[in-house]
Length: 548
Image 1 (tube, rainbow, N blue to C red):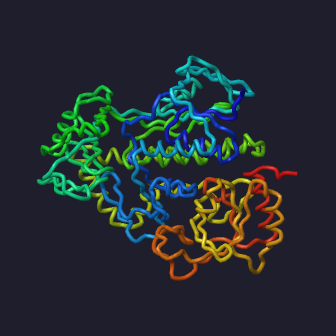
Image 2: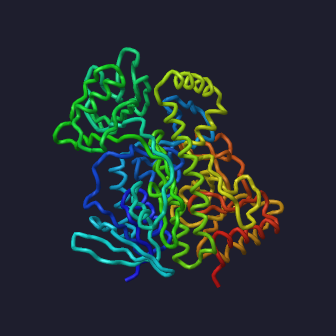
Image 3: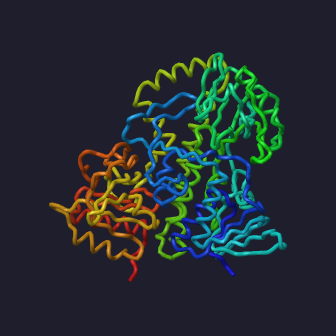
């Protein structure tokens, strides 16, 4: 039996890719996961950036957060331990969603199974080869080795990707061996642990700390969060220490001693109670900053950490990797369905590689600003002054969130300012019912939004063109409405978030063609015959030749 798509790696990136393929009509994608059981090792602590809004467009934000409300942006966020003040902004895309990766995998696994994805745990890829028609994979399993074939195979198996290595794809970049990272989960006791809220009162020069903060001293960096009452996730970076062997079973004393060295204060840290998850105290020397030479080798593709790795400072990893999945999923589904235009799959790397390079740039910049030394301290002082300027804050916020991502327009899509950018989550009036763009996107199908019929608006021409692609593009006629009261995070014409607008905003365009990953493929301020012709070209460029 030949499968349409096999995904190697059952972490968040692999599971979301499988979900996207299933939503795109790929029958029963197969996920191969080497681990016999989901890992309990703490890894990512949550989501940061535009990915939170992107997952809202699949209904996953509510699943992850347990909230029925739309996501709201963060008023404050650290950049190398310096605070970005974004309170009261419109246009803030820097959302946060605290959620341990262990729980994220659990929820995405359930979602994937509901969509018909087949997940094989304890199945490890050992060899692969491909020809013009298929990829053949050799797999070890609990029941012995076997072989399977697929039209495409996706490597979502992390920074040490066996798929990347077996495909002969290089992984150039740099490794900084200058510091040691120790992290783990532990208990912190009074009087340092402040009851309620998770604050720590360190005293001395350090003072009071809040969760999700970075504290730099001349000895290193201390960061922590609290995701369950009494359970603290602690990370320490130390420069100038002897290299450490990468381990996940260090004694809790190693973590306690590292915190003491960095903060200059003995912090009352102990192992968690026996009935709590293991501490998983982990040591790693340095950090890699690397991007794969290519994201695709014939019928093999890479997503997430298999394609790029970087420092975890600022939480960029899943913002980057999960949006890789959203970008690739619908395109590979289109190839599988047979309607993808030529070159569509090539746009995956063309669009996502520059984003990875910018993430590596800002993560390396943050690591440089966290390093010890009087010169760095002086640079941080200057950077703190620059962050009093809201233009600088906005630039860095957009960089960290991914809001500065603009994809190149193809297919005669025109030069409208929305083209290539993220579609704002407008509240629309559809038959008298307020409906967010995010709700319309739950099906993962392209959307053609007819927003502003009026003078010069060729509604009949727009409808006729839309009808030719009706099998794969949803055409929605709607007006722009005021957001419902209390709908924090619902964006207006500027793409920003905040309280419900007092007046109905103007439509950002007369009509907008939105790709399944949330980015605009075409937009026009007036649907003249020339604009409708541009729409026809954009539809063909992104969604292929119409059926029939």
